[in-house]
Structure formats: structure tokens, C-alpha cells
Length: 191
Ligand SMILES: C[S@@+](CC[C@H](N)C(=O)[O-])C[C@H]1O[C@@H](n2cnc3c(N)ncnc32)[C@H](O)[C@@H]1O
Image: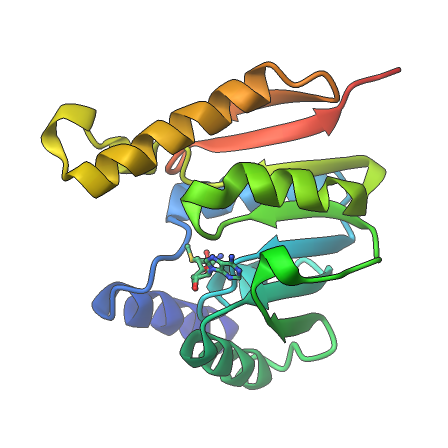
């Protein structure tokens, strides 16, 4: 039942062009949750709740933020159908305007790619001392910058700038893994 529901959710997303984490990225993320003993998660970018539902099955507590009302409603319904309402709280909001005081073991950034640096800088204070910040889509489907529209080229440049921001960050040490669609894992540097 659980497997079928998740499989159908993925099929629905693919058929309806809802961007969700790919299989390899998800497997990597779930492994990170296990190896880092993650219990609490803040997710920026819910879509229909696919990644949140998968992460919640590892007995984690999740707050996930979505600014698109249609997506938010679908996420609420999918979480209800999965009986995971105790584990996942969905907040309908523009993440950059959200005031949140809780701290989390893992912050998963998977929303508008052009705003990654802003999300990172805003939510780093919500990370527990030994927590990790994970960002998806840093390879952005391996698109060639010379073969895309002007808008996509700007986006690719922003993602490159975000990677430079991570590489030159004094507070966080980051590894970018070539798995899924390119995933970064950032940890606070030891003082
Ligand atoms: C890639 S999808 C999330 C996929 C989801 N994490 C998964 O793997 O199942 C990105 C979502 O982030 C939402 N989003 C983008 N920018 C946002 C923002 N600034 N605040 C809140 N939600 C945002 C979009 O509406 C979209 O539904």
C-alpha cells in the first residue's frame, strides 16, 4: 500500500510536469538522513509532498514550505492519505517571508533555483549545531549553457554563482555530489 501510493505519486508528478527529486537523489537524501541520525527537517519547496512523504517514512518530523496554493492543497491531501499528518506540517507561504524559530537537523532546499543563496542565508540560523543543509538540482539537468534560452542561461549563471558562494564560504564546508541532479551537503566548519 505504502509503496503503491508513493509510486503513483511519482507517476502523477511525471505525467503532470511536477518537478520532484529524482530516484538517485532521493536515495542519496534518505541515506544522509539515516547516517546523520536526522530527526527533524525543514524543507523549502514541497510541491505535492513527494520528498516529504518519503523522508517522513524514516520517522522524521518535517516542516515543509510551499508558495503555490494548488501544490499546497495537493500536498495536504497526499499527506493525509499517507497517514503522515503527525509527521509533516505544510506551511503555505513564500519561504523568504517566513518567520520560523525552530531548529532542525537537516534543511532541504528544493525551491526556486535563482534564490538558493537567499534561502541558505536566511535559514542557516535554523540549523542545529551539527546539522546539514542539502540543496538539490545544482547540475540543473546538465543543460549546456550555449544551447538554452536567455532566461535559462541567467538561471544557470545564478546556480554557478551559488556554487561559488558555497565553495568560498567561511562558515560552512560544502561537498557537491554528482548524484541525482547534483546535490550539495553543507556542514558548519569547526571553530
Ligand atoms: C522542485 S519542486 C519541490 C519538489 C519536492 N521537494 C519533491 O522533491 O517532491 C519546487 C517547489 O518549490 C516551490 N517554491 C519555489 N520557490 C518558493 C519559495 N520562494 N517559497 C516557497 N515555495 C517555493 C514551487 O512552487 C515548487 O512547488
